[in-house]
Length: 377
Image (cartoon, rainbow, N blue to C red):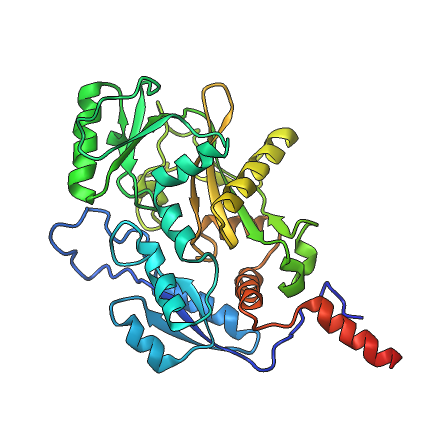
């Protein structure tokens, strides 16, 4: 019998894996007319190299491809068996869906969520509408397309204003919190003008902030290298990470600057992982994260941000269906490390879960049945 606690290879041959992503270039000036924090969610080449190194430990070959406008041609030239997708896209209201759409058109397997889910998850307003309609808790919110729309009565100051279709805290700074209608109008029009997206306005949540990582799906045990990670429903819940908000005066805001690896004022917040929370709250946070993941049909991996309101009730903020994987820095990697999961194993499981969906791996149960049959035949 196969020992489920050990990695298992069930492929006919090693794969050629293309790692695709967008790279920050600190020496490249930003084009005119883009926001000051444009490209904040792009990766570094060091992160891409770490992903490639992890994948190569299991015998695969890798190549890095820039997720730029030449990607259709470089993909054709590289001819990979599967793509490890970290591409953020090149603008527009569903940019994280661009690379998956291209890969679907070219019939190339790839990791994590597919086109529609990546388009939905970047649209914070649409995501909240879907969650709200499925009775998941979100703060009262309203989308502003012009800036002078009538304000819904359920919105109560202070309010929080951010771009409706951006990630990595883009457009979030200390001016995101507004206390008057004049401030709201001014900030909404700034967001609309600079980011070329609607402004999402929601009641400010003053409580503790958590992020919850999810890995797997119903049949994860059949394709994972580490089936013991997964519960009976096929999902792995990472330890909850809590952002340390104790070093700030007044309302605490998780700004883009705070999310950046390279910049930040002295005394910036840190994190606690595993977070010290009541067991019932822990179960509730993980249950909400998993429902949020499944309701928008996320696949294999995601990270959900949740914050408590003034009464201590959890409210979903957003979901990242393309979570960062920088070793020792990205939230999902920190959560994995907190329970002893190495970066290499995390990356390989994301790859193997995807390969299972695309028919590139033989399911573990079928493999074991064949082995058992050969012994008794």
